[in-house]
Image (cartoon, rainbow, N blue to C red; front, side, top):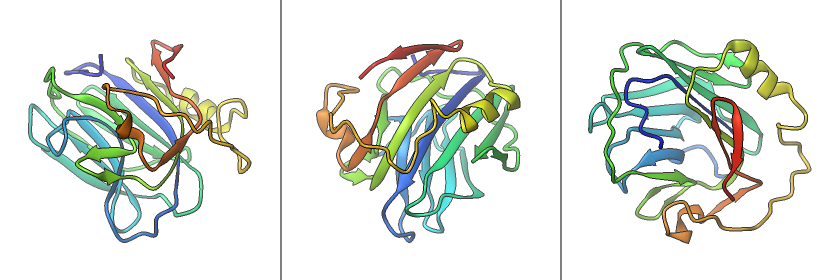
Length: 193
């Protein structure tokens, strides 16, 4: 269940965008097609990490972080929510705190989406090592995710070329290459693909 409400959580993934900067791209979220959250991550038209969070059902938090996600390069993204603050990280560098993120929406009709937001909007690039925790990771844990050779991708990553069904629609991963998805609950890894 990815309806965190007012609970702490951590999102982590590696991305390798291949589309030139200039258009918004959404690559990871728990959303309804073209509707509000509770959360959505993407790359802004200027190439920076963009975070959207809905509480309860409109994008009340819509922040371009200023943390760069360059084209044709791997970037490690971590989003930590602890209390009402959200802390964005890119490549183990923390960005400005996003304050006052109240209780997130908990609608039952939302779907975990990787590589799309809906209605044909597809991220162009690779996604690897997706993790979701139901707790706030520490800065030391985030650093270990970033530097751990067994967890981080390398320049020689070869996609599995499989399509996982996150909500019954195999098209949800169109345009995305990835290695594996792991859902982490309290630090325990559960493969889902």
